[in-house]
Amino acid sequence: MRDKVLAALENKTNLPAFPLTAQMVLAYLANPKMNIADLANSIKTDQAYTAVILRMVNSAGMGLANSVTSVSHAINYLGLLEIRKMVYALSARSIFDQS
Image (cartoon, rainbow, N blue to C red; front, side, top):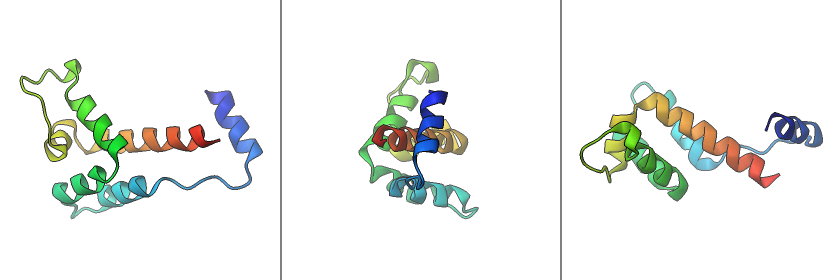
């Protein structure tokens, strides 16, 4: 993976921008007056982000008794740091899948 990233950086003069959804989510996360409902709405605009968050919160590792179907509830269970990590991971993967 490291070699692929380095090769992509060496071969590209212009790196692609983060996806729009990622930019919106990261802007909400950077705002100290951020509202969970607004954050959830920005995440819901992208099916991949929504699916990953719901898959994470409903995984066996979370150990929840009931399944979570709401992005807002998933954010509350996972926490903002996990959401931020997920956004960076998905964005980086989509950028390097394009190259």
